[in-house]
Length: 185
Image (cartoon, rainbow, N blue to C red; front, side, top):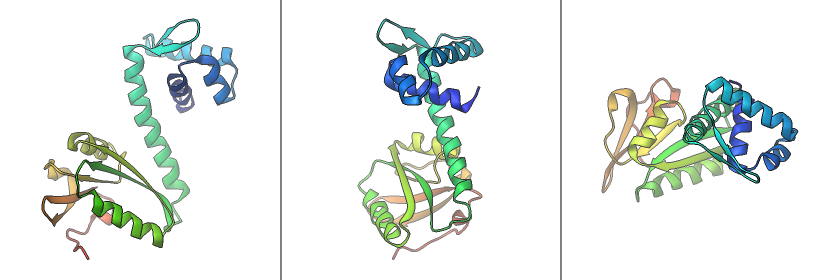
């Protein structure tokens, strides 16, 4: 299964129309249709319900969409990491956040960092603690801010007392996650 084919699949899922997807991807519609039939044959499952003017995903197609989004996010993250490896003043930071009023602290920190390092791009995704820590564990986030206690044996973390007890989770092994304690200024 090729990354390019997964990108094609996701574009078809977004457009819900093979012709529009082919136009956006700059490929011919017959070629795109053939590649999707080959993908269905490779997986042994029907991914689309086709009608005259639209295409909808089957249950198997919905599962592939979720997995393909995760795989492509990871592939894009790897590409960006290597592209910006020598540029410490730029790059992408992927952050997962649980819903909380304490997000204001993250917003302030991002604002200050953005003023100092305008080349850094922040990708912030919200969800509940389980969703956020799952994506952190799979390497899709660089750090996470949560409101419920996770299994801390998997993470380096930082606790900062406030009205709620909260902290930052950073995947073990990352350089900025090695310090055990930081103090808020």
